[in-house]
Image (cartoon, rainbow, N blue to C red; front, side, top):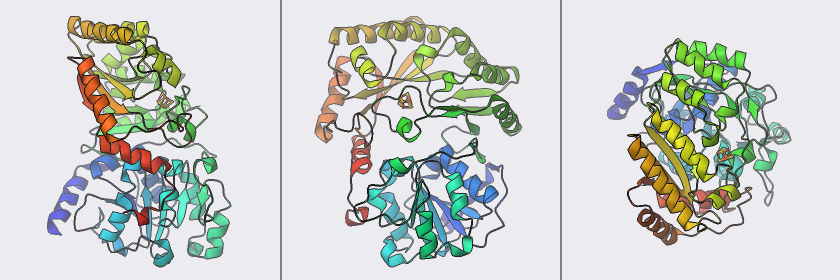
Length: 457
Ligand code: SF4
């Protein structure tokens, strides 16, 4: 217990908190991330919900991260998880589904809602949950699909009734909230909806112990114009929203008072009409502004120049396949010629690392083996002649529910391992990291299964 307390204290000691604790409602609540502090605090959705609960709803909400420790105590006041009256769980990734019953049992909390009788009340939301909530239908008292802020405000609008069956049933009529799914009812993505009044998610706590290290994150847009056939993000948010530049500038200024490191989050950063001005602001104010992965075909020399001036040493792009036909088929519109041109333009600058995401198992990936080899040789030549590096990150295609690729089969463990080995052989000399096969299996299973998780784990 003392060891765990000291770990948690060491974390809070290096955090900068940018919002006030909630003091209006009398319930005590914990927001749970079913994985590590590092993963949870690096996820902007978790931070946004934490801030909404405390600041907008007035609910004093602590954080709990599941790190398989024997002492399930929350950050901030070390309260045991079983002492909270409301638990909210954020699930962005399918890989964490299995941790949910485990963390509840570890704290002595009954995971089955039919036996738990709302003590504590459990509310679950997040992108992976929105795609497929079915495994957790007997765990959650309340599901939230899509944006969470306004739905949480609605749920807590009558806090004294939050455990009444009639109240919960009425909530279930609101789009994006489900409390009493019928036995065979198909729930999830179809009920998703956006906030009516758009809010701009931004960091509520800045910490060096996150993936981005002391960075203030701000979501400049959501939804994606490319709508790749394997992508769930563009199904959850089918319309593209670019946030208002004036509002963004004001938030960035506040963030810059706390840290020089600003992260611009959006599936399509370079489609934002004000992106040049935002990056220029960063460069002129001595900030280190970086972005989520970019569309390679939209990276012009002015963008590279601004990213350099913002101190970026690497740029990340998702090219998806070395086969041009596979790329076009899945929705990416960047031809081989443009990949080579842009890679050369980037590595000619002081940005010396290009990170490239690829997917194995896309339809047509076998097409044009010579062209693929030529593309890889071209990229290898560019990185050598420009003194840069190209790092590939490779995973297998996971055909998820609601995507146009949902009907494709999943190859299974052995076949994925073989495809990783073949890929390594074909593209000798490539710096490549393969995503763990078990993660892919979990993603496939939990994004589609209708089975009750309580019968599995
Ligand atoms: S570019 Fe990325 S976010 Fe956009 S649709 Fe494709 S995979 Fe999804």
